[in-house]
Length: 77
Image 1: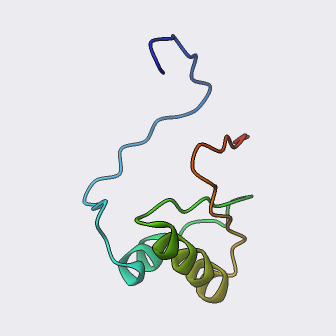
Image 2: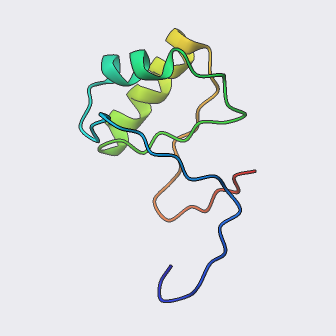
């Protein structure tokens, strides 16, 4: 990142047939079968859209979600 080597300590998975432009309903349906993560960070679209998606995650899936501020760093474990 930014010209530096960054070791990856994660499993990389291929997610076929997922559009970066999916609507909230499509995203929720895609996630419905997944186990609840420790945290969710929606960054889809403009800030208002990301906040609406965060609220949708909470209401529909019961997941805790936080919309990070622009440039904010989040530790993912």
